[in-house]
Image 1 (cartoon, rainbow, N blue to C red):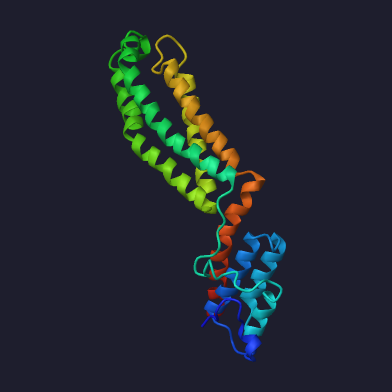
Image 2: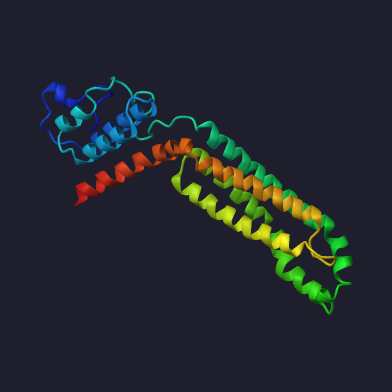
Length: 248
């Protein structure tokens, strides 16, 4: 059973006793709090976490926190490691993602409002003669409009996940920006010509959405945003590693 914050069993003459999962997680939580507060550098934090995973006794664990102030985990328990407020760049990216959800809905509204005018022009074009306009509606416009709420939800979900510091959220958002890029290129190509199925307003809305995604992606992949995601991943990795080591 883990000891109260700031008290390691080694100080009570029990340093040779075997440590438990909870004891290792307690020490890792202390190291996490020290890292967030700037008391430990990244390399030293990684080294000590590795040593905590390899520790077998209370004495081994006590050495890892001997030079740290007592009670670092008192306000932030080891089962919920210290997590600093998301840096400004990540918070700005999250707000841009929320804006992306709004723009996604606005983009769909723009397409819906301009659709009658586009149809009246397109049906006069030879490329949309003979019922091809209906095929275009069923294969492109209808699926795009029907998926709008889902896409807007994905924007909001990724905003939440990135602000929480989940490492996978950055790469999921990267994939979303890739899809947005393909969609923007499609609208860009389809909006040229007299009988184009998209208007300049459609292109403007799609471009604004793509730019918002591009800026948000740039912000979450900056060097200053990296520690925010690393801090979130460290305790989970450490806990899984400790359990795997003991089971083996």
